[in-house]
Amino acid sequence: SAAEKGGYDTFMAKEIAEQPKAVSDTLLGRIGTDGRLKLDEMRLTDAELREVDKVVVIACGTAYHSGMVAKYAIEHWTRIPTEVELASEFRYRDPVVGPRTLVIAISQSGETMDTIMALRFAREQGAKVLAICNTQGSTIPRESDAVVYTYAGPEVAVASTKAFLTQIVACYLVALYVAQVRGNKYGDEIAAVVRELQDMPRKVDLVLDTTEEMKRIADELKDAPSVLFIGRHVGFPVALEGALKLKELAYMHAEGFAAGELKHGPIALLEDGVPVIVVVPSPAGRSVLHEKIISNIQEVRARGARTIVIAEEGDEAVVPYADTIVRIPACPTLLQPLVATVPLQVFAAAMATAKGLDVDQPRNLAKSVTVE
Ligand code: G6P
Image (cartoon, rainbow, N blue to C red; front, side, top):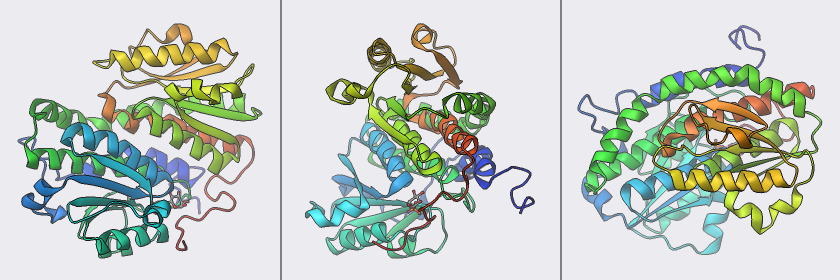
C-alpha cells in the first residue's frame, strides 16, 4: 500500500532513501569513542583471528558484489590473502579450505540455498564461518560460527539496495577489526579510515541529491540498446552492480567491466553513441588509478561512446572527458562504493519506470532463492 511505501512510489525508492540510516544503524555501537572497533558478537577469539591465513568470501548476486569490495578492503587493511567466490561455484571445484581459513558468507535473507550449501561445505572442511546477514535468526547465521548482522531493516523490493550498502559496511568493520586484532602496520591509516567511515551516513545522504539528475539521464538513455559500466579497483564491483541493477529492473543489456580490461576485448562493442557509465576513483592519494581511468575514458570516447562520469566533488581533471558528469562526495577510495553505487541504483529504477516496468517486482526474479 501507499502507506507502507512511506510516500514513495515504490519500495525501492523508499529503500534507496533509507540508506543513510541503514549505514548509520550498521555502524551503531561498533566503534568506541576511542576509535577502536568493538565486534564481540563475532565470537571468534583473537587467537583464532590471528591464525587465519586465508579469507574466502562466498555470496550470490548483489551480495557477491559486496564481497568483491570486501576483498579489496580485507587484503589492504589486514594483508590476509582473500578470495571472493560465487557460492554456487565454490563447493563444486574442490577448493582449498581448512581450519585456518575464515569463510565469510554474505546474505541479506540468510536463506539463499547456494550460500547455505557452500557454508556447510566450508564447515565440513574445518573452516570457521562468519555470516554477514540482515535477517536475525535465519539459516545462514544459525549455521555459522559467528555473525555480524547488518541493520538495513526489512528490504521489500526484489532488487537489493540498502542491504548492499550495509553489507559493505559490515565487511569494512570486520576487516578493520581483524586488522586491529592482528596489530598490523596500517595503524594510522586505520584510525583515519575509521573516522571517515563514521562520516559515511552523512555522505550517503548527500549523494541522494543526485536522484533527479539520474532520472533525467535515464529518460535520455531509455532507448539505448545497451549500457556499459566501467570502473577500477573498488569501482569495478560498483560497475558490476550498476549493470546488474539495470538488467534486473530495466531488462536491458548491460555489462560492467574493469576499465583496464576494456582494451582486451569489450572495446569492440563500442560504436557511436553507446552510453558508458564511468565510476572514477578518488583522486586523493590515488593519482595512479585516477590517471589510468582518464586514459580509459579517452579510449572509449575515441570510439564514439557517450560518457556519463561519476566523479568526486572537486575532481576537475575528468571534466574535459565527460559528456555528462555526476558528482559524488569525496571519500577515501576504499569507502567510495558507499556513495558511488547510489546514483546507479536510482538510474536503474528510473530506467524501469521510464519503460513502464514494475520496479519492485521484476519478472523472473525472487527476493530470496531457496533452491540450488
Ligand atoms: C536473489 C535476489 C538478489 C540477491 C541474491 C542473494 O537472487 O534476487 O537480489 O542479491 O538472491 O540474496 P541474499 O539474500 O543471499 O543476499
